[in-house]
Every structure is written in C-alpha cells, then in structure tokens.
Length: 76
Length: 163
Image (tube, rainbow over all chains, first blue to last red; front, side, top):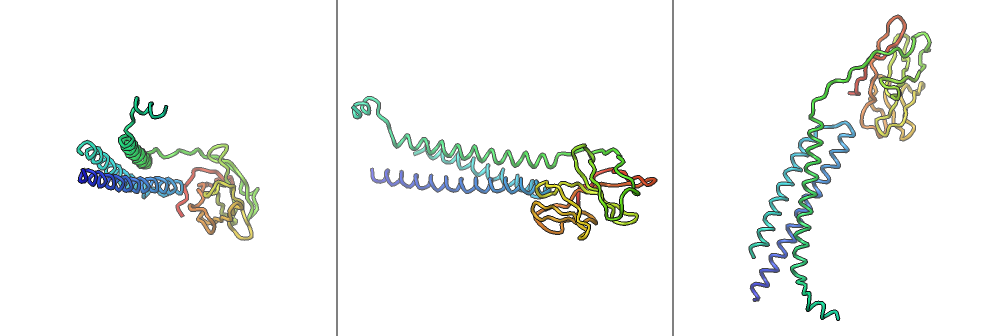
C-alpha cells in the first residue's frame, strides 16, 4: 500500500516535470514564431527556415512526451 | 442533502484531476503543433518562387521645371504609392518611395541636410542611395528607377533598397 502510494507520488512528480518541460518547449516555439515574424517585417528572411526546423523539432519532442505520458497512465 | 447526492453520484476526484492534466498536456501539444505549422507556412511562403513585378514607364516630371535641390511628389507604380523626386544636381535626380520603412509615415526632403527625413520617429535616409542614416528604420527606402529622355523624367521601375 505504502509502496503504491510512493509510486503514485513519483509518477505525479514525473508528470509535472514533463509538463514543465513541454511548456518550456512551447515558449521557445512562441518566441521563435514571433521573432521570425518581426524579422520578416524587417525584410530579413534568413532565419525563417531554421526557425521552422527547430519548431517542428519541438513539436516532435512534445508529441513524443505526450505519447510517453499516455503510456505511463495506461501502465500503472 | 449534499452527502446523499454524493452517495448517489460518487465522483472520483483524483481520477477527475488526472484526466484534466492529460487534457492539458494534449492542449499543449496542440498549441505546439499550431506553432510548428505556422512556422512551416512562413518558411514555405518565403521560399515560394515569385514572378518579378513588371513596371510600366511613366513620365513624372520635366527636368527644366525643377530647380536644383527642388522636389516633387508623384505616385508610382500605383496611384496610391506616394514617391518623392529630388533634383540632386544639374544632371542628376533621385526618387524614392515616401513610405518610411519603419511605420510608413511619409518622409520629406531636407534640402539643407541633404537627406530624407521622417518626422514621426526621427528617422533619416541618405539621398544618395536611400540607406538609413539615423533612427529606428531597419531597411533603406525603396528606390524608384528613373530614366531621362529629351528632358522628361520617367519612372521605370522600383528597386527594393539594398543599401
């Protein structure tokens, strides 16, 4: 019983840590998007493609975390 | 009364919170997807091949009607695209879009300082090639390509500032 409770707490902490990491990636994506738009308005297009690549990379990591968390939920 | 409702309709609060966390993670992934799609669309838009714009030649002034240091406003290439023509010397003229590259205020000619000046945020551009001399503008003024034939000045194209 005690072990089960400890495991539940550990999973909760891991869950929150993963959510915080996802939030950080999302903030990076938002920053990339707004700074790319500002650069475009300023006539600079060099950063658009690298920013898109990084943003897609962040999406892949976020999706991977989502899948991992869903699996963690289904396998107590 | 409240207890009876809970007995009849028990709510597993822990499970309920757990589901909301999962929904939150799904929402984060969805927003992340939106950002990635937005960035990809921007990149595709930038890389999309475009046909170069074709401009018609348009007579905008006569050389003998402008004194050295004088200026004239004209519209090119569209009727609403305000531009400024400046006679910089006996045989030289220059023309630029009047739209400041910062926030689109109209720029004016300052003869004594030989520059184009935007009064909104103290931006200034060189009359030589339109490059930024001071202030917040990040890009040079688009230059209007000119041609002089038999004393008539024609606007023949728009060169995006590269100075």
